Length: 494
Length: 129
Image: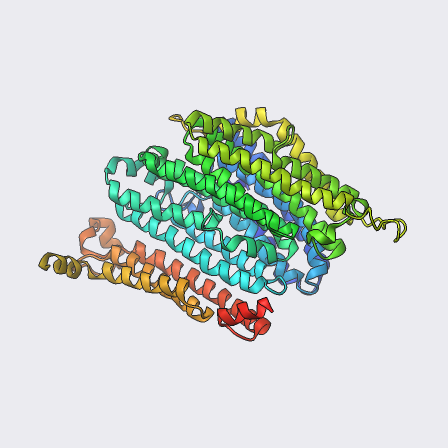
């Protein structure tokens, strides 16, 4: 292990621990927690070290098996992938504390299988942000998807059917991406991203390039559940085991948005993608519709978790729209929102996991008076809700601010209006939950005597508290984050 | 008319890929039986494999196995051998496809245990009750 290949180990250690969990965790389930937490802690520190090095010395590349690029597969860390590595590692570590608890309760005896898939998924996510090869990206995309299919299918009742829906939609998405890569390969004869970006603009083949861009983008939109291709997401994330939801919901869609940014910036180059104004205009309208309809569909849900899954659909619209504004503020907002939305979603799903652990359900009717039973959990929920709405100084405000600025810069008022409407709907959504939880039990509180105090166990509560604090800390450190990191990502032409 | 026929005959493998892909796509979206959906997915993937393998083909190309010492001494004439890279990529894609099919079959087994049927209409009926 040296400084140039540390990022390889950040990916490989979770993968090896997945094998170890499968080998030893079946006979002795007390080994699972140390393996999961140990390897993820290593990944957190490793990715922070790598990020420090990238910010100091510039991008690092590692060639696997010493096959030189463009023939071999390259693992590249630039500021954007370094940021994603830290995000994945931190979110996965915080989520795994809670997952260990809820899986022990929901899937007794199957912890080893669950965490084998869980760790392979995390390794796959690291691989996705590191790889510098377009075909390798397809393989890693399918590794993360197949493990997610398995994790979703482990849930009770309707989960298997939700998982099958996800398999069909996910495979269509992956196949479209693969077709797009096929067209790139025919055009350029290479699969290395840097090499493609060098050759493609010199070819002047607008028809084939546009076909390839269309296939790749539609494939990734299916994978990230961009409205109207979102059909699989609410059921898959809504019926998955809570332990899977806490990690999959914050990371999967966000990493796919990262892939879209990566493909636009360092494979096709922005000049080619945004050459036709109508593409960006169309996508922005779609994003605006995604935001409004995602939020409105959330209004109709009677279960906190299903409500959150529709909010994820709306948030994907924020990020896709931000990227397609094609200006500095929009892209900054989109990248910043990847970080913020991952943390906000993590916070809210950790709350869901804690409540499910205590009372088995998060239907709104079962949440009456929840503030008295679980005051700390619900305090974190209020912070997460404020962040989702976009109240300063929580982080959600700052990324939304950049997105709105970007929308005004580009003159895309439909996007700005959609953002504002969605914030207002979020106010209604979350204050409805808070009202039920705070005032719901007052009328019959007198009959049952003092309400039972049933706070979540420390393994679930402490990471949740840390996440809630992170929401404010990241919000307050937006300035340094944008100046030192995200400025490096925005390309010169923007 | 003749021009169109010539166009189709000249690139018949690409036309077959498009037709296969549409058949698979229709089965995935239109069929109500879950096993048929899965089969549609497999046809879809096969179409893409045909597409990739077609891109490597050359007229009169030999198999890409060359004598190492000859190649090192005199180089390789790329026009005489087919491009092996798309084939290698498709080996990986076949592995991915088989894995997805395996997972999907396992999930179908769970659905069958849960609902006792693999017809989507009957499942929906049972869910509403």
